[in-house]
Image (cartoon, rainbow, N blue to C red; front, top):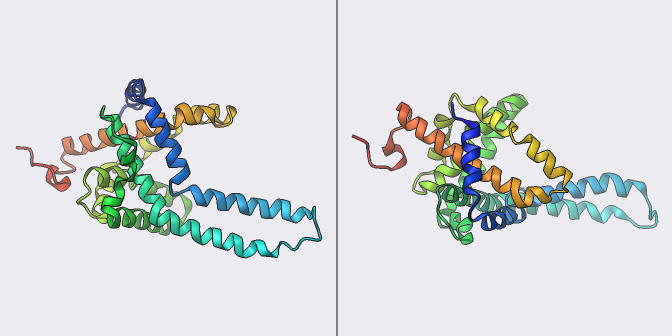
Length: 243
């Protein structure tokens, strides 16, 4: 068990310095991350289901939108797999170093392209696994998403590992803590509501960096706990064995 309040308190202390850079990283993540074009596609679908059906301009043939939306869908999927997920994982690595008190350059969010195959494989495999678990019912998919949630940090910290190794280590690190991870996510609900009331402004300048920094702290806590309890061995991460 990890202390949610302690981790969040340390995150707030860390954000007293270098917050501006953390804000920029979160903005780049929202613009270039794996969910960017998926969100744009969802907006296009909602537009098609509302505005197009209102027939404000009945003389216009809207059938041309079908191939456009299809192209957006395909492009969004390809971008998310080949680029967006790599940047998203790289941002996790940036916040891990930020949590540790370092001042990583913004360019580090693109560090995943140095281990491109592993980063792409991680995003692809995790998506497939979560999707397959979701076919059983929604809840197993949610549970497994928490099980794999630490794989990004693991691969960023130990890029010599394969995607499957990072996913396996994440499952072992989070074993017995999935409920805690859910409650940790839930503890930010008030901040998300405040962000909504400020039209997302608070989210940009504070909430998003706060959440990302705190998540990095959770990884550190779970990894330390796993090593202390003997669930993991240092050499499994490529670390020197402890004698």
